[in-house]
Image (cartoon, rainbow, N blue to C red; front, top):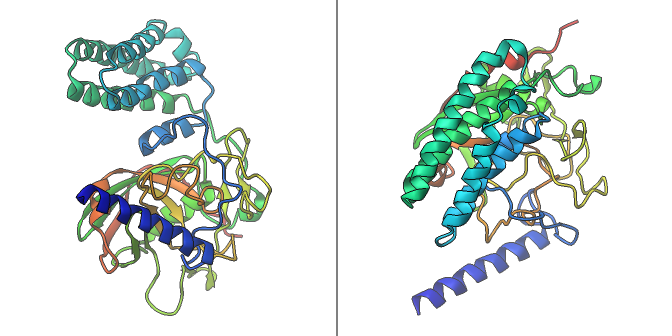
Length: 368
């Protein structure tokens, strides 16, 4: 009876959410779903994995290595798929046994560092094989995460320069030409997030600039909807965004979405408005703790300082059907402290936000 009641409550909640969306009462985040497309295959719901896949590199071997290790998580969720796990480990081992294919994409100056990483990856894969033979799920999960972190470091060494030119019309805005890690302390605990300037340089640059200014320190979370969003960034007073002291004007940030396969982001228009209903962003809303720019519903270019954490829930906001992809700009993911997001409510506070890595990637606009 309890299970039936819980199922009825969940179905009722889903129905209410859909009705609310259709009637336009959800305050500028959802729109009707007639043209939304489900992603091919299993959606990636891990922010760390999405960040690895988003790196602007072109080495098929390291991507196959990552994919084999990522797939282990899928097999662990199934019952007794030890043969598939062993196959993934064998595929990964085969790739690192020929390191030249990995090293070819790495500048000469970084080769020694890369060789050390490859040695550590080999050792980690060997430990994974032993854990698989022992059918130790916990050790496989921990070992996989460790090896994937090493693979991510190797992939970052393969990035050579910034992959595109930001349109000149946005040269008056800060830009993040790479990645940065931000530590955000709240009254409920600490959150760590990685923001991705390779995919959203203007949006990420604006955020990192505001973090460095101390803009978010002391601000409240103004919106908290379970299994949906947690939003902050509204300053005290009548203004709803950041007023740049250099200009005395509201700093407006354009909608910025990089689509898979595109050489550069699309600016100033939603993918729906561009007729690109089925295109997938490089940074999608398919992970718990996706970090995205908030904006007024009618104005794609009206964002400023307010942002939200997306509280992905596969039944209520399924990947490919959450209706945010292409309409709002994801610029990073929470990598640590997801349990803190679960606790935060409207009225809780950001006590401080600090850039702990990657501050050198922030490029400030040149003042004439």
